[in-house]
Image (tube, rainbow, N blue to C red):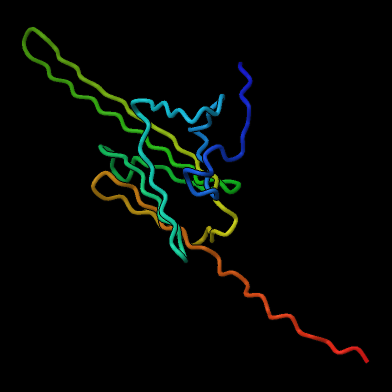
Length: 146
């Protein structure tokens, strides 16, 4: 087991400060992005009333994904396995593959969990996260002193 320094939001100036990706935590905080071959690209787009998240996940089907929200985190995982067996007279050919990934994003506090929508199309998993309506502050009222 190794100790890893926990830093709440290491890439505030690059990504939206409301999101933090657990997978990109960098021990030395040197802004060096080392990507694994199986790490899937992620885009976060902030709009006035919502966030849009796009996750590149080609080769999967809708049924392969498991998406949950737990303690303010959006957890995305997918698993896929295939097996092909071809038997001939004197040989058997067996091919198999297995792929999986996990991503976890800390959601900002102004997201309405019940209104999160997800759609998977052409290898892109898209999320729409609605923001809570902000309470408009009233103008200060001047009170005369008698």
